[in-house]
Image (cartoon, rainbow, N blue to C red; front, top):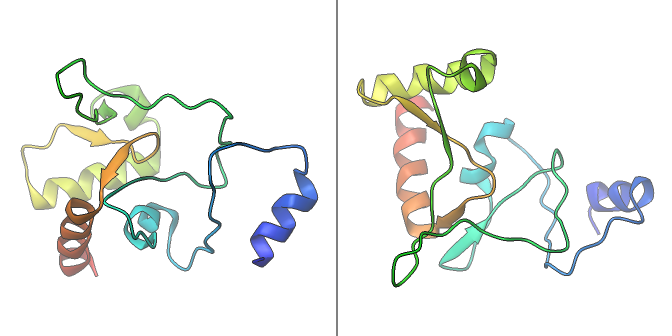
Length: 129
């Protein structure tokens, strides 16, 4: 087990879930977690140590047939973004890529398509280092 996993189990021994969890140590800033997550499946969901994985999880999907995963976001002009420096920074960087962006996509509780994530992250790293 990783050091993080051992510490997590030491401080939060009663937190358990039926959902398979894999612990991965962070080597980049938190906002890069989605890009740095080692994924071998076509789709994935990510969380971090700021969140607790519930035993019963409902993912957001449309009512279309077939259902499509929904993308959680906040309007960039809302206080849910403007009150937080990290959100303002993400929005500012997004404006450099496309000046028409008016929302900030939330990276938790979202189903990611791995190859789309890879293409986005490659472009992000090329543009921002």
